[in-house]
Image (tube, rainbow, N blue to C red; front, side, top):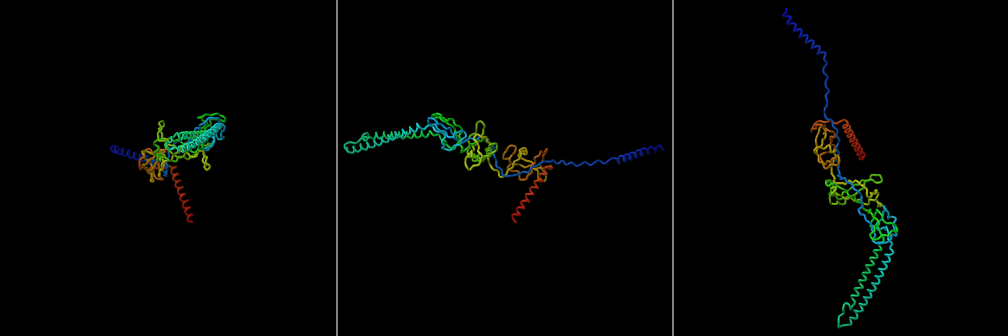
Length: 405
């Protein structure tokens, strides 16, 4: 009996344990299924647009006249006349009278010189006649030859020299009389006037300064490494000059006419000189706003032309490669040919095609071929772009149908 108890008790305990485990197992809730997490990196992209591009070089400078002249009096006397246009800022034409020195003394000097010349010519004619008479008399004498003095040739040469001296005096008197009139050497603007009406001036006195209005110049400093982007180092290049006039931003057209040919020892820059025709728009057929002397302008020099190029932010380029999103949503690296850096952008001439999607967001561990996903905003932009292209195509088709009809 005792032996049976020893056998049954362990069996009962084992069965009780199994029942209790089954009971607790039936009460336990099944584990909740974990949601599958998509860890595909999300990126933002921009579509590449490829088009012809003209390289430019930026510079700056100050507008100055090509010609400027200090007007100096060449005779002495009193200022008896001043032109109303001979004031600071006045515009004058070539040959226009600006000031006049009292001409009375110089007119008298001219009359005196002309009288002296008339007297010298009369003496010359008299001497010629006397020489002819002397020659005729010597022709009757056959036993000896006449001398130069006998034929009065030295006297004739002396009278001829006096006539030439009188002619020179007349020319000098005429020139001095002309110099009493101070005229504009070319079409100009008056920069300054230093004399007043009634003032007495002497030879060498400065009466004013004029600035030529036909052509203005701008010296444009250009770094030596930037000349590579210009055709023929900028010779004959077109230039857009941007400045301000009467509170408005205006652009003037100019042209590079020469290089100064040296590198400035201080700035280490090369200087190109641009010219602007008719800077003050004085021609009747010109509607451009004037570009004033002394104005500070920014210059954009047009350089080489690229058949196809695009601009990309510089931070997106790593070791001459950019990250692109393929049509199958995978990462691809494209090698690109960088022509130049321009501010925060780089200009790429080859390696990218129209419509390529460049990744503009950062990737932690980018690997070529990895799977990527677009963010919702990028998806919406892509949808909008596709819709716009579809609308444009429909419009073109409708226009073609109307043309056929």
